[in-house]
Length: 395
Image (cartoon, rainbow, N blue to C red; front, side):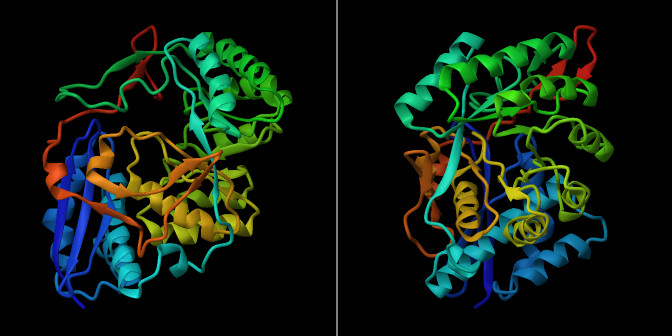
């Protein structure tokens, strides 16, 4: 069996996505997700121009060799664009392997150690009052066992819902000092609204300095957070260590990591309790397995990145990893807009606080290329934060 064609599919069903389809001479094909919010076209150009020619004529089962060829063979080590491109192909190759074997992906990863996946969903709203009410509704009406809050109002403004081409990013105002007490008050009020048994995740989204993050964590650690996500930015590893040493609150980190080497200080230093890598950003399934094994060695649980702008293909990959990993912790379940399900079939579905998935060979998803063509790609940016003096703040 040889690869005869590699397609990139850019589409925008209310959100930009970049999908990869690798076709073999046997008729079996695999699908993958290479989406990089705000830079999708750059990833597509890399795949079309440089990586696809390397695949034509290759045995699709040589997954590890191709991964190393892209990561090391270009000499320049991967950043977000390279690793996203590599992920799309890596997923497609694993999908081919599963389909040719007639087995779901999790079976190729060692089989199930659990049958369903604990998940959490995002609490969003235009005001703090809206979000507190929604948190209570999620628990009461949907049966969620864990919910996720995020610092800032409105949360994640502009990251989902692409309706037209953008020439510049949206700007969100942000004053970290003013937001410290708002953040603390918000967490405490949600805890009061949902009760003691519900897990509450709080995403600080790298918006605070180490000292500011410590002030927040010390005020809310007595209210039993499930974990605090991204209390600081990932650029300085010692900042994370500094925060870890000054709080007992569980910490989750890693959605901006691009390789196992970036993860190592946090893992070996035991600075985190949950590892939050984005499977697309680390180069796909091949690397995710290795990172999960490293985390297990240090009693760190996985909590793969899975927000609203992640497609059902990546949600499915996350699910297969989760059911086959001993050290699984929890899965982010970003509720994707209904339009994407016209383009992508399959993927996990929510049920009573957990994610379940239908048994299918490979990843378990497929792409309707005709439907994808009905939603043309639109250039869009991730928003940015600026403080009152005009300076840029981590978003």
